[in-house]
Length: 356
View 1: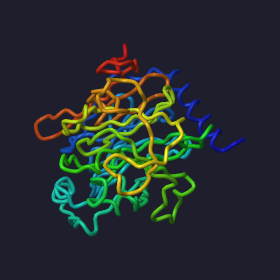
View 2: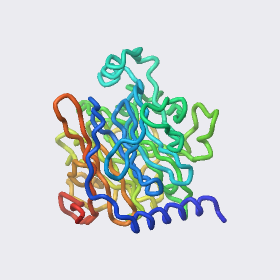
View 3: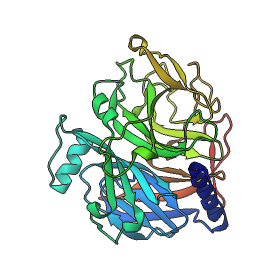
View 4: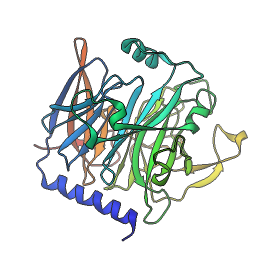
């Protein structure tokens, strides 16, 4: 049997499992963390949620009780996705010299990063090696350098690093095999013209193997959305719509609609063309947005204003989604994980709360 067909078959089996299970509509996760939730994923086989709280990774049960964690990560652990076939969580990890990086290092009493030694990684977490609270990172986590983003950092496209991560079929390929997609963070600089595209790196899983320090991306895609504040915060492939969803903090350039959620169909053929704002740099591989959501005066730019997705989103593949949002309590943060249903359409909000 074809390997990537087998992988997607497993995903659909897990979708069926999630449909058969009584999944929670709402839970609260309290880790007494000073950092807010950044991303989330669900594992219906282990009946668990995985969440990142900037410098920590946690596993909870369906009631929100913390079962295991990796703590004191000297970096920004962000968005994540779960691979049922490999039983790995893949997450973005930034170790850099910005305000957030300095704050994390100071809080942990760890060495701070300079611009020269700032690095961005795909973090690969073997969830079956988690051994309770404060599991050593070396026991369960492996990393791969995202060299493309390191080289672009602060110099090209307004690159601030990486954040969104998801697994989706290879874009533009019929029955495409699963690939890992990593999204750039983009500085919200209204004075630049080269930062109006979101950027996705495509990695084949064959390149993500032990000993591969810096796997080479198979493709680099540009999506015209207008500038956002910090770029794509969360990325998620939804089998129900066949789209990769991109959640961002709204931008501030007045010439754009400044949506906070966009969708990219994976069945489209990428175009190699000269891009707006990058006219002097030759041609780039470009993807188009799904033409649903709110209309815009900017040609090709459509999306929604939906803020719940920026700190964690996870589609179940059957029209149901989970979103994780932070809530501050005195000196610490909790995360609320809520189930919604996709309704799509042209309105401001493409989701509605799921019924109990």
